[in-house]
Length: 248
Length: 255
Ligand SMILES: Nc1ncnc2c1ncn2[C@@H]1O[C@H](COP(=O)(O)OP(=O)(O)OP(=O)(O)O)[C@@H](O)[C@H]1O
Ligand SMILES: [Mg+2]
Image (cartoon, rainbow over all chains, first blue to last red; front, side, top):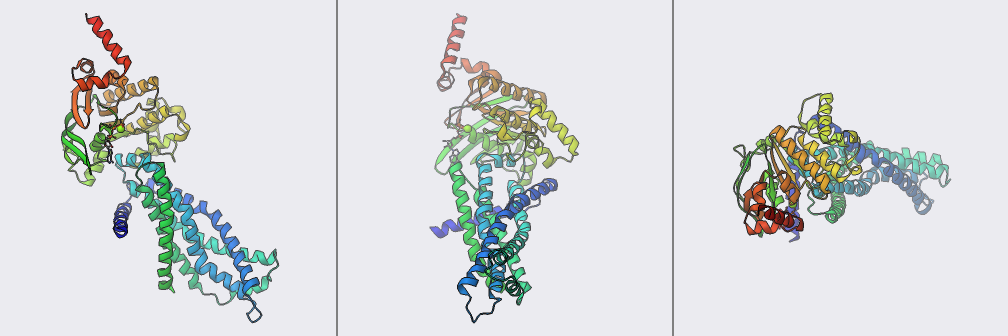
């Protein structure tokens, strides 16, 4: 029963993506939508990314320094661990998990409302491929912006860590710098960036699927929005497991 | 001209439309009337292809819409304009952008030409002063008029309106009706309107199709509609006191 429902949804999802990835009818309009989505999904998320990353960076640093570090550990360990956690997991996976809440519900409720108020029907009547017109710019827009958000997140986390040194005086800035520079592996950055591309695709396409296929009224839009967030979070977690294994 | 031949539509458990045969001519306002739930919206959605009919033909000037390929359908749709029950304006775009949308999408004209065309259409519906407003900032009647402007921006050959008057006061309804009627005559479009507003029926009903529980119960003009002896049609039309009184007066005058 559950499996059947899952397979039906998956089939419909693949079908929708088939209609989404088609040549835009008007490049002019596609360009306009693409820029709009980059702003709405990407730029508008910078604030929350900076804020959360800043605090997590600071908290990780404090935790390691005050609760984990003991006498036999080198002094650079706090900075080192903070950097690796941000790069390896937080700035890509956890940040995308958070974004799936913000961006996913945004996409699902926007498309769901367009569906229930017949705006999508109106597009179809005009002879526009509504799936491609609405969904493709969202997917490409978020995929374009996500590496940028990853960078912002990492940088903000590092600044957060330094704040604990400059303002909190919990750790000295030179210990922190030593840790931040210790044994740096550039691939870790690329790994986060690559993972984030997959996650961005999951967030945008899965949320679009739930929003686009809404039937009914505002209650159903609300449900779709919840389902979008839950499903894309689950998918991010699972694919994180595989991708991390694959890329390490 | 749009022809329907032996059109059936059923959902999983329920037959909604049965054996609809009719012809909607161009240059005329064709009305589909019927009680709530009789299947008007489903019929219109079958005509424009938002639903696939279970069986039967929908002929657009002889071209069978149901059997067309996807590409042919898209092509044909660029000749259609539709005004939805709730206007269905794009609420992320301003009034002007809404009206320009079909042009932006499908015409190669320069920005200036497209804008001029959109302004002409907005002028047509008397909304030139609202170009920069957003759909959320204007009244329901104005939204309907913007929807009309958007629907006619590409000079459609076929115009569809699903209850253009629902939720509007009688005077605004009249304006909308007259607008659709004059556009139909001017551009010789094939216009189909769903309605249960008797004022529209008496005002602009050049060809009226009465749907009763999913089948075509009666067909005729607005002059015939009041004098018909079809009981179901009379029950529908004279449900309102006003129209019953009008009829009584008419009969009294005859004697
Ligand atoms: N997608 C659908 N699935 C199943 N049944 C449907 C669907 N859409 C409409 N129906 C059924 O078809 C019948 C006709 O509905 P329709 O919306 O055409 O009525 P209507 O004549 O437009 O009414 P109103 O004047 O209230 O708009 C109703 O009984 C409705 O339940
Ligand atoms: Mg209806």
